[in-house]
Image (cartoon, rainbow, N blue to C red; front, side, top):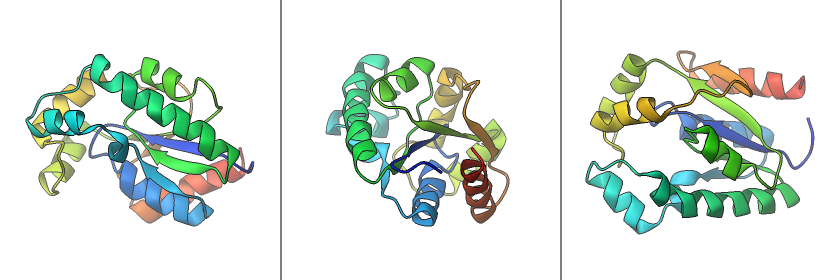
Length: 163
């Protein structure tokens, strides 16, 4: 596996990006970042009110993440949990650095059940907007989220080691 790799774990809200991203970063001994932590307050307030973000809301956030990716790539590498639902978002994130994409794939029903059992600023009733916006990448490594987190991380690590 190449050094200084930046891996973006993507998927809709509730797919397990943060859980898997943290465990993957730990397994690889590299830093973990959650894209949600980079949202401006205005975006968080909007989502907390049940209002989906639009592309105009997301653009400065994506640019900030892209700059972070460049920095992480020059240091130890990193794992970033980020929804990255649209191809245009993924293009911004990877415009200056080559990244490895891991897509957490799951059905609406599976993810809805998970969201109803957790406390997150993205409410379960907004899940449909996530699926509506989702453009499933034709590239990257796709992982079924029905496996337990340990198995998902092991599957990803095995894939990266053979990549």
